Amino acid sequence: MLNRKSDLIDMPPTEWPALAAELLQARRTVLPRRLTEPGPDPAQRHTILNAASAAPDHGQLLPWRFIEVPSARRGELAEAFAQALLERDAAATADEVERAREKAFRAPWLMLAVVDAERGDDPEVDLSERMLSAGCAVQNLLLMATALGFGSALTSGKALKSAPLRRLFGLGAAEQAVCFISIGTVASHKPGRPRPVVADYFRRLGEPGPAADT
Image (cartoon, rainbow, N blue to C red):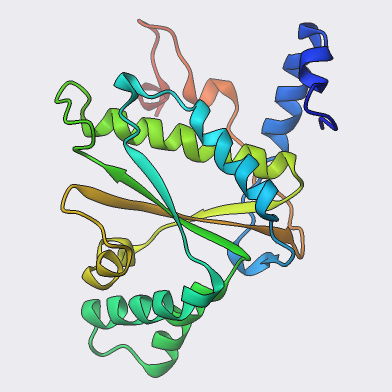
C-alpha cells in the first residue's frame, strides 16, 4: 500500500490498476465480534471519513451522514437494541435481550450511516440515487480502512427501523438508518467467501441474463 501522501502522484499511472485491484481484493467483511483494539486513531479516522467525500453525489446534496457511537454512549445504544427487540417480541428471553445489548459493545469504532430522502429538497434526485451515493461513500470508507490495515463490517437488522433507535440518534421523519459500520483491528482471520465472477453479474443488451439460464 501507499506509504507517503505523494506516492500516488509519483507513481506512473500504468501502476494504478494493480494498486486498485490489490486494495479491492484485500477488502473483506470481518464480523464485529472479531474486531478489537486498537481502532483507528483520530488522524486515521479523519482519513477514513475524508474518503467518503469522493463518492458521486448528484446535485451535491450530501444526502448521507455518519454518526459515531463513542464508548461512553454504547450503553445507550445497548438499551435501544434491547427495547427494539422487546417491541418486536415481548416474549423475548433474558438471554436474547442480553445478546441484543451486547452487540452495542463490539468493534472499537462504530458509526451509523444515515440517508436523508429530502436533504437538498431536489425532487429530481430520488431516494434510490441518494442510497447509491451513500453506498459509494460507505465503500470508500471500507476501502480506506482496509488500506490503513483495519478490518471492517456492515451490519443491519430490524432495530434500525425501531422507535428507540431513531430516538437515540435523533433521526428526522425523512431520514433512514441504513447500516452500522464497524472498524477495528482483526483479532482472527477466517477464509474469505468466494466472490462472484464477472459472468455472474454482467451481460450485453440482447443477450440472455443469468435468470434466463435457469
